[in-house]
Structures are given as structure tokens and as C-alpha cells.
Picture (spheres, rainbow, N blue to C red):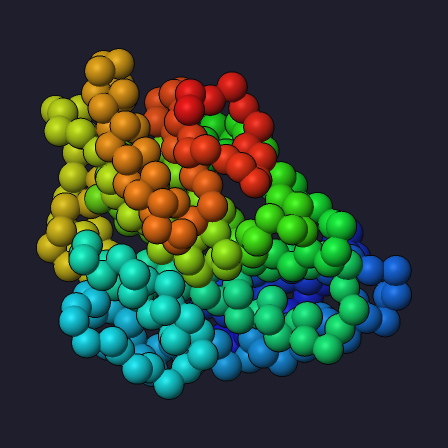
Length: 289
């Protein structure tokens, strides 16, 4: 495997960091271009060892959480465990938060000691966000990656307490036990949003002949989900099935919101959407609530 790669994208504003499966797009905003350069250097430095340290502790990170709190050495690994631990009563491994935790780690490195108005680290749709006082961040939500387009927008203000957005679903790069096209979650950081999005997407589920599942390790040998059946195809579903599946996911999302684990969630399945109560954040679409 080749080592970490860093380059500015063609627009000259965004930094691209890539190493193995980790693929980050980073952008910082402030009037002083030197501060942005320093922030990007700090991000590059922090990125060098991320993948190697994760690989060293995969046996811990792929194990389901139980009654004993794991104590990995790496800072990204510790972020993963912390984000997933509140959900340990449900089957979950720390890998459910890996993308968000990596984004959080690189964002923390790049903003340390810097004076940035805004910054984000986008790890395949799981985004860590930094907002200075009075600043705003808007992200687009894509319901179906096979039909790319902005289906909804999420607007976050600096005082909202939101530091991360993450999306999960059966169509995404991660395996899912559910049938959601997309579940987007806003939380205090990207790792927490990532773990919650994974579990809410798992909860958007229904038993129907149009849904095809396979053991996770038949699809990906190193899957942390083992023999659990993951969704590989969802055909057209009747309205009743779509409604019931979304309602099940919404119930899980509202429970997480009530426990203070997330700020808001947006759920999508076959053209229908539901949201939790979105305040203080704004999720813009004509969604059922």
C-alpha cells in the first residue's frame, strides 16, 4: 500500500488527503491565507500516522462492545470507542464511528492554535465542522447516491452545538442491517454522528420479499459485522412497508435525541422522508415530522 498523499485540488482552496480507504477533502476559511496554510500543514502532519495506528488496533475496533470499556492507545481509536459506548446495549463495534472519528481528529489538529473563521473535514460524507462566532455552515443531503442531487440542506449556526454531520444507509460505502436510502445525523462531533447514523439506518427496516440480504463476510471478508445479514438490494416497496420502516428508524432517532446523543436526524426511503424535531439546527425540505 502506498503512503499518505496530500495535494491541493484544482480550485486551489481545498486540500485532499488520501491513504488507503481514507479519503478526506478539507477546507478552511479566514482572511489570512497564511493561517490557512498553517492549518493545512497541521492537518497533513496529523494525517501521516492515522491509518497505521488504526490497523495496529483493528482487533479491538472490530470487536462488539460489551460490559468492559476498551482502552485502545490511538487517539482516533479512543474517539471511536467513546462515540459508540453509549449504544453498547445494541450490537455495535467501534468501527461504526471510524469515518467520523478520523474527520474529528484531523479537524482538531488543523484548528489547534489557528485563527480560522470556519473549517471542515469531509471524510466521504461524514463531516467534522469548526465554526467561529457568528458563522454558519450549510451541507447538502443526497437521498440516493445512484441519483446524485441535493434533496435537502442542513444549516448549522455557530451556537447550535453541532460539530459533525454523518450519513449512513444501505447504498453507502458501509454495510447496513437496514434499508434506509440515507440517514443523516447532526451531533456534537462527527464520530457521534457517525455511530448514531449507523444505528438509525439499521433500525429503518422491514421484512419484505423485495429486500435481499447476505451475511456481511460474504460481501467483505474483513467485515466487523461477521455473519449478520446486511442489505444488498431493496426493490420497490409498498407504502405501508416504507412508512413502517421509516417510523421504526424515527423512533430510534428520537430516543437518541432524548438522551442527548444527537441534535437531529433526517431519514429517507424510496422518496419519503422523516425528520426529528430539527431545532436548533435547520433541515430544509418538505419532510414529515
